[in-house]
Image 1 (tube, rainbow, N blue to C red):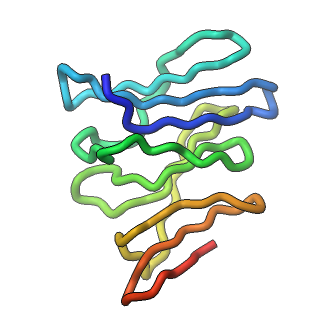
Image 2: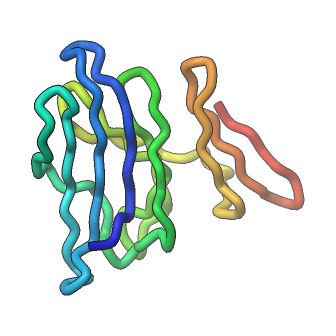
Length: 132
Protein backbone atom coordinates (compact mmCIF):
# COMPACT_ATOMS: atom_id res chain seq x y z
CA UNK A 1 0.00 0.00 0.00
CA UNK A 2 1.08 3.56 -0.72
CA UNK A 3 -0.29 6.50 1.26
CA UNK A 4 -1.76 9.22 -0.99
CA UNK A 5 -3.58 11.49 1.47
CA UNK A 6 -3.72 11.68 5.24
CA UNK A 7 -4.82 14.03 7.98
CA UNK A 8 -5.14 14.36 11.74
CA UNK A 9 -7.90 16.25 13.51
CA UNK A 10 -10.27 16.60 16.43
CA UNK A 11 -14.01 15.89 16.36
CA UNK A 12 -15.25 18.27 19.07
CA UNK A 13 -18.84 16.97 19.01
CA UNK A 14 -17.83 13.37 19.82
CA UNK A 15 -14.66 14.35 21.75
CA UNK A 16 -12.32 12.16 19.71
CA UNK A 17 -9.11 12.47 17.73
CA UNK A 18 -8.97 10.88 14.27
CA UNK A 19 -6.44 10.03 11.60
CA UNK A 20 -7.69 9.71 8.02
CA UNK A 21 -5.59 7.76 5.49
CA UNK A 22 -6.16 7.19 1.78
CA UNK A 23 -4.02 4.33 0.52
CA UNK A 24 -3.35 3.01 -2.96
CA UNK A 25 -3.32 -0.75 -3.45
CA UNK A 26 0.21 -1.67 -4.54
CA UNK A 27 -1.10 -4.67 -6.51
CA UNK A 28 -3.99 -2.84 -8.21
CA UNK A 29 -3.13 0.80 -8.99
CA UNK A 30 -6.77 1.58 -9.82
CA UNK A 31 -7.94 0.84 -6.28
CA UNK A 32 -7.82 3.04 -3.19
CA UNK A 33 -9.13 2.50 0.30
CA UNK A 34 -10.05 5.20 2.81
CA UNK A 35 -9.51 4.41 6.46
CA UNK A 36 -10.12 6.35 9.66
CA UNK A 37 -8.46 5.64 12.98
CA UNK A 38 -10.28 6.79 16.11
CA UNK A 39 -8.03 7.10 19.15
CA UNK A 40 -10.84 6.55 21.63
CA UNK A 41 -11.89 3.23 20.04
CA UNK A 42 -8.30 2.40 19.03
CA UNK A 43 -9.25 0.86 15.70
CA UNK A 44 -9.15 1.44 11.93
CA UNK A 45 -12.44 1.53 10.03
CA UNK A 46 -13.00 1.61 6.25
CA UNK A 47 -15.20 4.58 5.32
CA UNK A 48 -16.72 6.17 2.22
CA UNK A 49 -14.16 6.38 -0.60
CA UNK A 50 -12.11 9.57 -0.86
CA UNK A 51 -13.24 11.48 -4.00
CA UNK A 52 -10.10 11.12 -6.09
CA UNK A 53 -9.08 9.08 -9.09
CA UNK A 54 -6.03 6.88 -8.31
CA UNK A 55 -4.57 7.92 -11.69
CA UNK A 56 -4.17 11.41 -10.19
CA UNK A 57 -1.53 10.21 -7.72
CA UNK A 58 -0.12 13.35 -6.06
CA UNK A 59 3.39 11.84 -6.17
CA UNK A 60 4.03 12.53 -2.52
CA UNK A 61 1.91 12.19 0.59
CA UNK A 62 -0.57 15.07 0.82
CA UNK A 63 -1.38 16.06 4.41
CA UNK A 64 -4.80 17.59 5.05
CA UNK A 65 -5.05 20.89 6.88
CA UNK A 66 -7.36 20.87 9.93
CA UNK A 67 -9.97 23.61 10.26
CA UNK A 68 -13.08 23.67 12.48
CA UNK A 69 -13.67 19.92 12.57
CA UNK A 70 -12.68 19.33 8.93
CA UNK A 71 -9.60 18.13 7.06
CA UNK A 72 -8.91 19.95 3.77
CA UNK A 73 -6.84 19.23 0.64
CA UNK A 74 -6.43 20.59 -2.88
CA UNK A 75 -6.88 17.61 -5.20
CA UNK A 76 -7.53 16.53 -8.78
CA UNK A 77 -10.76 14.52 -8.63
CA UNK A 78 -9.99 12.92 -11.98
CA UNK A 79 -7.57 13.32 -14.88
CA UNK A 80 -9.74 15.78 -16.86
CA UNK A 81 -11.14 18.05 -14.15
CA UNK A 82 -9.58 21.10 -12.56
CA UNK A 83 -8.37 20.97 -8.99
CA UNK A 84 -10.83 21.54 -6.13
CA UNK A 85 -10.70 21.83 -2.36
CA UNK A 86 -12.04 18.67 -0.75
CA UNK A 87 -13.14 18.82 2.86
CA UNK A 88 -13.77 15.87 5.17
CA UNK A 89 -16.10 16.48 8.15
CA UNK A 90 -14.72 14.43 11.07
CA UNK A 91 -18.05 14.36 12.95
CA UNK A 92 -20.33 13.32 10.07
CA UNK A 93 -17.64 11.46 8.08
CA UNK A 94 -18.80 13.13 4.87
CA UNK A 95 -17.03 15.02 2.09
CA UNK A 96 -17.62 18.51 0.79
CA UNK A 97 -16.14 20.30 -2.19
CA UNK A 98 -15.27 23.89 -2.99
CA UNK A 99 -14.13 25.39 -6.29
CA UNK A 100 -10.87 27.26 -6.47
CA UNK A 101 -10.90 30.98 -7.44
CA UNK A 102 -11.79 31.80 -11.05
CA UNK A 103 -8.36 33.20 -11.88
CA UNK A 104 -6.65 30.25 -10.21
CA UNK A 105 -3.53 28.97 -11.92
CA UNK A 106 -2.02 25.56 -11.16
CA UNK A 107 1.48 26.92 -10.47
CA UNK A 108 2.89 26.45 -6.97
CA UNK A 109 -0.54 26.12 -5.35
CA UNK A 110 -0.54 25.77 -1.57
CA UNK A 111 -3.40 25.56 0.93
CA UNK A 112 -2.89 27.18 4.35
CA UNK A 113 -5.07 27.43 7.44
CA UNK A 114 -4.82 30.33 9.87
CA UNK A 115 -7.22 32.32 12.05
CA UNK A 116 -10.03 29.84 11.30
CA UNK A 117 -9.81 30.52 7.54
CA UNK A 118 -8.52 28.71 4.46
CA UNK A 119 -5.95 30.57 2.38
CA UNK A 120 -4.78 29.60 -1.09
CA UNK A 121 -1.60 30.92 -2.65
CA UNK A 122 -0.71 30.40 -6.30
CA UNK A 123 1.57 31.93 -8.92
CA UNK A 124 -0.04 33.63 -11.92
CA UNK A 125 1.47 36.13 -14.39
CA UNK A 126 4.78 36.17 -12.47
CA UNK A 127 3.02 37.21 -9.24
CA UNK A 128 1.99 35.27 -6.16
CA UNK A 129 -1.71 35.63 -5.38
CA UNK A 130 -3.43 35.00 -2.03
CA UNK A 131 -7.11 34.16 -1.71
CA UNK A 132 -9.05 33.75 1.55
